[in-house]
Image 1 (cartoon, rainbow, N blue to C red):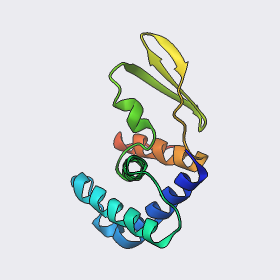
Image 2 (image 1 turned 30 degrees about the vertical axis):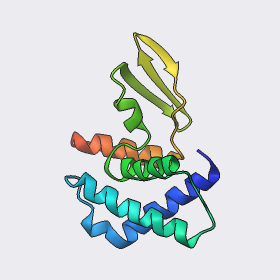
Image 3 (image 1 turned 180 degrees about the horizontal axis):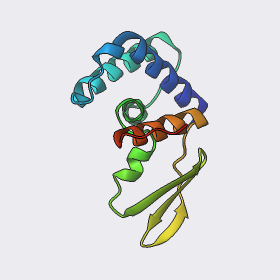
Length: 130
């Protein structure tokens, strides 16, 4: 992920929370996606940054995954050939395919993002990590 992509993602995510925190509903994924798309369009109108249509779509999905899902792990979870995901460090995520662990190209953006995903996972089973 380029620094410009990351900066756009951070700004759009922050704006989403600022403007629509009380309207984010995990049961209305398409509605949340639409709000993120609108904020992305606004971001590109007010900055000198440009992106291809494909990168804009990837940006919207990345923010959506962070807000409603498990961030960068969503892409790994969507792959049926992956049987296990092991995150040892924000920049070190292994996946198991056919019984073989392999270092994934997918990483967390920061320790904070990794912690948020861990907290989300354990909260789903009624636990917490101190």
